[in-house]
Amino acid sequence: VSECLTCAIKRVAIFVGYSCNNDCEFCVVAAKRGRPDRTTEEVREELKQAFQGGARQVVFTGGECTLRKDLCDLVAFARSLGFISVHIQTNGSSFVSMDLCKRLLGAGMTEFNPSLHGATASMHDSLTGRKGSFRQTVLGIHNVRKLTQGRMPILTNTVIVRKNYTSLADIARLLVGLRVHQIQFAFVHAQGNAARHYKRVVPRKSDVMPFVFKALDVAMKANVRVMTEAIPPCLMKGYEQFIAEPFIPSTEVRERGKLVERFEDVRISEAKVKFVQCQTCRFDRTCEGPWREYPEYYGSQEFQPVAG
Ligand code: SF4
Image (cartoon, rainbow, N blue to C red):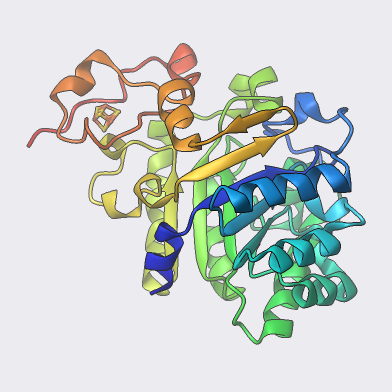
C-alpha cells in the first residue's frame, strides 16, 4: 500500500541551502557551497506554492538541511499546510543528537534518508572529508530506530566511487545490521567535486559491477529492499529488477530562482545519455543510459545492446 501511495502522491524536493558540515569528494553541489542559505520566509513560500500546486510529499534537501536552526519549524509548517509526508535527506550526522531526533520527529518528519559511503570509519570519513562523520551517522541511524521502535522508514544512499566500490558488500552488511528499510547504491554523478577530480573519483562501470552484484546479494539474502541508480540494464544482467529509475516518483524541484516541474524529464533529456547502439536494445524504451559525462572519459563500449 505504501508503494502505491508513494507513486500516486505528488512530490516536491526543496533545496533549502548549500551549507554543509561535510566536504564529500563527490559532492554535486560543491560549487554552490558559498551561496547564502534560503531564508525561512523563502522556504515557507515555496512550501505554500508547492502545496497549492498539488504536492503532498516534501523532501528537504541541500547541502545539509539539518544545519538550519529553523528545520523543525519548517517541518511543522509543512505538516500544518497538509503535507502528509516529510522526508529529510541528510548526511545523517546531526541525528547523533537525540534532542534533534526528538524535535524533528515531534515536528512531523516521516522519513529519514541518511547517506553512508563506507563500511568503516576510515573509509566513510575519508570520503566525507570529516573525521567522526561515520560514527555520528551510524549513531544517528540507531537513534532514529530506537526512538521510533523501527517504524520510521530509513532509506539510505551510498554513492559508488573509486575508493569504496570493492567494499559495497561490507556496506550492505553494515546497513542490514543497522536494520534500515531500503539501501540504494548510486553510481557517482560527475558534477561538482567529482567533476574536478574525475579519474580519481569515478571508476569504470565494468570494474564495479561484480562488487555491486555481491552487495545486492547480501541485501537480498537478508530480505532488505535494495536499489541501484544510474547503472543501465545492459550492465545489470540478472539483476534488472533492482534498477531504481522506474520507481523514482515524479518530482518537482525548487531551488532559489529555479523551478523544475518534472525533474525526471530533465534527468533523462539533459543529465543522462544514450548511444547509437541503444536503438537495437530491448531496454531502449525504458533505459535512461548513464550520466552524460561518463562516456566522455570511458567511451560507450561497455554499453552493448541486449537482444530479445
Ligand atoms: S545498450 Fe543502451 S539502451 Fe540498452 S541498456 Fe545499455 S545503455 Fe540502455
